[in-house]
Length: 162
Ligand code: TQI
Ligand code: ZN
Ligand code: ZN
Image 1 (tube, rainbow, N blue to C red):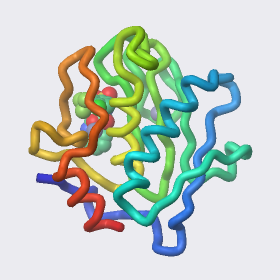
Image 2: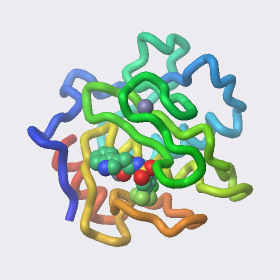
Image 3: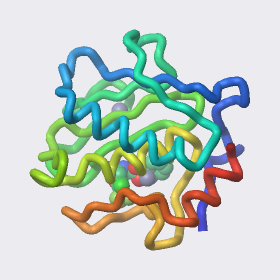
Image 4: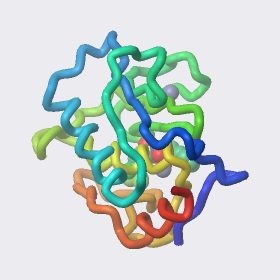
C-alpha cells in the first residue's frame, strides 16, 4: 500500500503547472533529458499536474542534477551502486542522481535511468514507499531491471494527493 511523507506534504493547488530544470554544470544530452521528460509524463497522465522544462535552474520548482560524493546537502553519494539517487519531499524539489553510477539510457548500460527517475519523481510529488512489490514506489528493485509503468497502487496514492 502507498504512503506519504510525515504531514502529507504536496505541491499547493495553485502549483499545477510545475517546472523542472537540469543543473547547468552537467551539460546533459538530449537523450538523457528525454528520459526525464518521459518519466514526468507518466505522472502527468494520472494527475491534473503538468511538467515543463524551464531554462532557469534557480527558478525551477524541481532541480535535477548528477553529483558525485559529497555535494553539499548532507547526504553524500557513495560511489557505484548503493544509493542511486535521492529526492526531497514537496515543496523542496531537489532531485539528485549519483554521477558515479553507470546509468542505462534507452536500455544500454547499467542502472535503468528512467526507472529511477519515475520513482524519485514520486518522492518529489509527495509519495513515500509502498509495500506493493509491483509498485514504482516499492523501496527495492532488482539490479538491471526496468520498471517504469505505474502500478494501480501508485496511481491510487498520487490521486489522493492531487
Ligand atoms: N534512494 C532511496 C530512495 O529513493 C533514498 C531513500 C531511502 C528515500 N529512504 C527514503 C527517499 C525514504 C525518500 C524516502 O528510495 S535509492 C530505488 C528502488 C533508490 C532506490 O538510491 O536507494 C529507486 C532510488 F526503489 F528501486 F530501490 C531509486 Cl527506483
Ligand atoms: Zn543530494
Ligand atoms: Zn524511494
